[in-house]
Image (cartoon, rainbow, N blue to C red; front, side, top):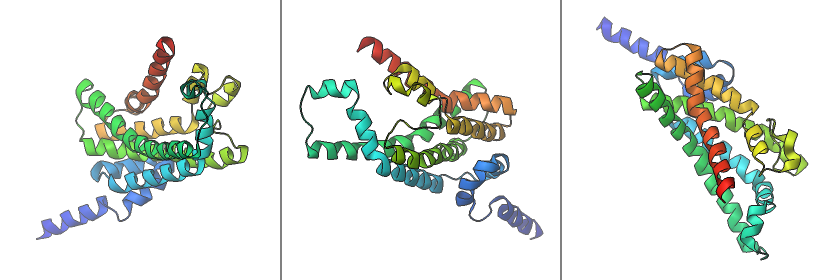
Amino acid sequence: MEQVDIENIETQVSSPKGLSLKGVIQVLYEPSSFFQQINENPKVLIPYIVLGVLAFIFLFSTKNLIMQAQMSSSQFQQRLQGQELTPQIKQMIKISILGFGIIGMLLTPLIEAVFALFWGNFVLAGKAKFKKLLSVMLYGEIIYALGWIITMPFMLLKYSALVSFSLAPLVASQGPESMFYLILSKINLFLIWEIIAVGIGLSIIYGISRNKGYLLSFLSVGMLSILHIIFTGIGKLFF
């Protein structure tokens, strides 16, 4: 009987109420302590909802600016072939920006978790459940999404989509289609913050050193940025 009570106490301690929502803030300033709790009780549903809400707020508020940036690109103009955009087509573009943007944001932590599972479980021969990895990636992605929300008012004030907490504005004159712009856009304050936080989480999940955790984070979170640059470069070479 006493043994059962002790187990119940341990469960209550390791699963505090409101961990899912508290983690949205705690991951920003106390990732080590938070991911220790996530290691025992991984959370997925609430952070997914929060991530979706943040993505919706950002994309809904800036869809006109994103559409304007897309329409001004040379590739878009080539597709138009001199045709005028109707209000119906513009509305469809806005809907696609909102829909595909949210879907892409929600798929990102899933893909990152797959990369982490590959590098961590198969290459480093570690042992971690996919749910724990996905939970770490979700809270890491919330950090990046918060960067979007902070950037949003500056975009609206400047009425430009080319505003970010990265080095990309240094070459803004070359346009968003420039490879230099793309590469420098990946040197982003909130992306670096996300990689560091996720690295701390992965070091706890796998029981490895912080440095190895940061490397694993770079190979999972950073891999999407690397692949984006590579595929964009290949596209520019052949198309």
